[in-house]
Length: 93
Image (spheres, rainbow, N blue to C red):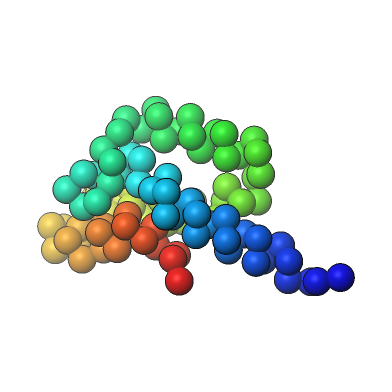
């Protein structure tokens, strides 16, 4: 039995999530986000939560960082971090 199968599957699934821009739904357009309403992002997150809770937790820290910097960061911090977090969703490797 392959002990690391789940890790590989999650990594592949996360890469697909990033490549399809699902992590940028409510991000600011000026920094690479889609600028859609937070209510839509919450609905999408709920779909992830009900399909696989452990996978849905993967992008949450990045989403929190995006929210914190968007609302409380300086312009320099926004310019430095938001494009990277939104375009790569923070964890792309």
